[in-house]
Length: 228
Image (cartoon, rainbow, N blue to C red):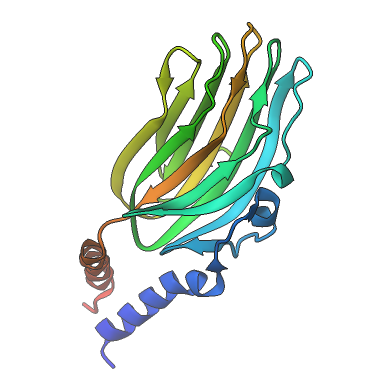
């Protein structure tokens, strides 16, 4: 067996092995997704792993939704695949505010090249605002708040007067993307702030493009490891 063939097998096995261990994602609570740990689950070709969720801050007597109170549903839409997060508890009333942090990682053999964030609301009442900021670590996972790759931000919001419900960002090809999503509901100045659910979807190339890009990665691997 030539070194080229052996190198390709080793590289492909290294990429595909984590996927082989994970089963398909199903409809469940965020708590059940957190329990999957580093094994995670798959939506299409994507592996979602290492979920974490916490309440970062709250005021005014806001009641925090727990991971067990959030329903997670797989979503596949053309070249986009990911998860929808829904809860009747995503809301605060006048004088209240709360902020949550959701974190996870995405892996895809061979390529991720974008991320889409979409919010679905039952209109907040001005001046209350519902905002979701999704920070991507392109090419690596987050270590705490640190990213050794490139960071890219998706942001959506609704304050009952001005809305931005969809944000799509395209980036260079990456096998791994870390995600830290901050959910802010703020009605401290009055009104109300709420939403029904949101999608976090990774964007992958068409299958034909994926294999071409994967071939490029293999050629790069061979050129760096070829005998001299």
